[in-house]
Image 1 (cartoon, rainbow, N blue to C red):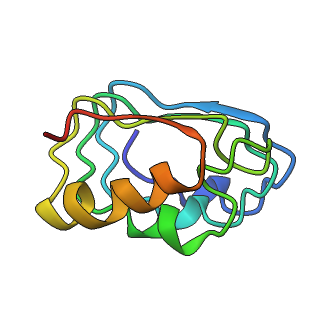
Image 2 (tube, helix red, strand yellow):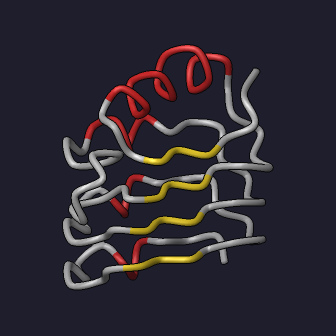
Length: 99
């Protein structure tokens, strides 16, 4: 799977597990306001800004991020140094490989 645009309007999704794919663009996920678990391990994601742009990501409130798994992705330095700390400050369980 590489194109997430077919998911863009599916606002009732509660859990999304997209492990071991070729996903790089997360922007279609921004409107999925009911997600509580988002597993994105082992993809091609470098930019997680779309997760930052959605206020619910990482809040641990079933709006986005009771669990956001980003391990085994080529996360950019801005994703690691700026965006991951922002997600972590929201209180959700964010798993990543950043130093």
